Image 1 (cartoon, rainbow, N blue to C red):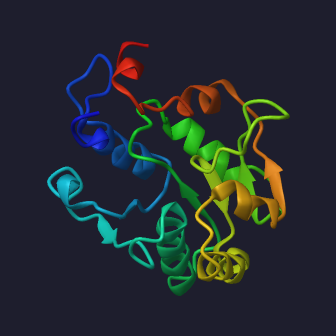
Image 2: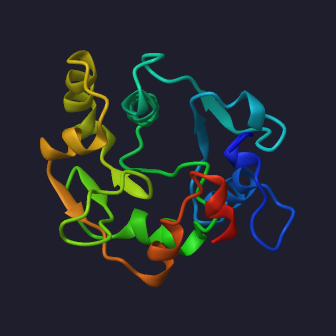
Length: 177
């Protein structure tokens, strides 16, 4: 993208994605936490806890591991992961993910029955995920899909807000969409 995706503006606004995500998360009752290389976002997220990947350099599961460890040590029973390149995540979509009734370790959207799980805008049970996630990382796994294949995962129903929230910006062409 040529710059940090969380600094891109929400369509029709000058508000950066990350700032909107923090605000919307708080509106939905979350305590936002930034995980990974969050230094570029410090100005937009003053007062928001920042965690390094755990362990550093271990790929995308290391970010989830840091969040899971934090949630377990602060006695939180659920966490919802969102990426900083998701400009259309709404408070409604976050609340839907958080409050969907399920006992599964992971509740994640799927765009179609044969599509991969969407690990962002997914809800995780930190206590039950901590051990299998640590084991996966210790075995060199980096893939959410591989991790999910070893866990109890339930599909989060695709409300209109969830479908819209899943749109992310990975390439410059996505900004035009």
